[in-house]
Image (cartoon, helix red, strand yellow):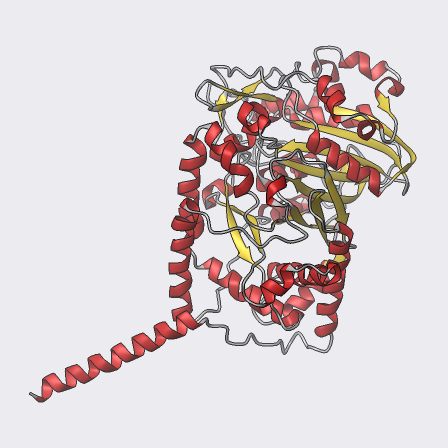
Length: 594
């Protein structure tokens, strides 16, 4: 039976209305029935009919020590899990889209597994103010708010034609005692342990008989808080869809003004992922050149990928790409006040927050190269090298954005960082110029068509031979997530901080997240890279301070103007058009004189 999406205005809860689309209840369950089931959900019906018993058990029965997962050898962990190779697809399973298929093959295809192609994971780190929340209450909240989403209770299987299907399980077949583990940090669980948690989640295989997500509740952190660490396979959905899921998990805003607060929050969330409408400040010739370049990038570079970025301390050596990943390292900057970031943006005419973020990364990469003595910097400054970032572009249509949900409706764009800049302000201007070029480029639409055709139909054996190198052509991956600007809670527990990152087969990932008025940048670096993630973190903070200091004397009412950055190719086009216009005028004049 086809799944039917509920209209967001039918959902009974403000927080759940954020989760507008294809999160559809399976079957034709009405909004009233959904509301009744949510209000009367029994924990006993969530896990093979025995969670009612779990609620009565002592927490120590499933509690682990602060480093129990990282202390177990990887082989021992894998032996405890069911084999991923028993993956015959059900005829009733929903077929995965092209990108969802590629992500799911990491857990279902023997060629992917034998090639050490790990799943791409989205990590949600929810820090709670309470040091010891009730794990059963957290399980109850997640059961109530996740099981209505078919993909969060579906197993992923591959058929004989390497097509991937999401095979839904009954709600009572999802064992939340297995999906949400409890770890007691005992007041010692800190940054190194959280980093080990990221590594362990990336290296631990998914059980073939469970949905592709899991969580760990770590109580009694060293800083007096607790952490709900949720790992979700990218096959379930992309950043836009999973952000909606994350927001739907949070409690409804306090209704202190007759519902106005909730309505205001919803309106803000609905506008979260709207496309920027800033007009690119490009000359006509620059627009034409950017458009033609976008066509080349969208067609030729998709079919015949360009050369990889230069080897550096933040890329995985080519000879080690097919080796097993030893783990990931994680570092996060301090919080940058979003109002201060917007102030810096306002001091640069036409700039956006994204331009500022990209410039910070560009400056930080150069600083980290300088600190580590990376030879790649000399090559880049001589114009013979480059540092690029892949970034996901939401390809949902305007209609879908009002009600679309999970799935992977995106395409990867590529951005070339201006490592060769004179100062932080120049880095912003160069980033802005390149982003303006991207705005008029047709590359994304062309890539979407070609990527869907390739990833949706190519045999898994072919994809497995190419995917590692394809995902490491660019130096890094960058994504930007906008979290709630107001206070938030989960199951009645206040959320003190939030992090949203991705662990993938590439070398370096930058995750940008705004939450409660602060912007933070996280860096996840593969341990096969020779660089230091803490050096990258420090360089990001220094880049922010340098840009802020460079703009401190600039008045927002009199912003700096962007210099002319029209490329030589565009200027040559203008010259050709001018000469052609003059020549045509002369010919017309000569014709009339006859």
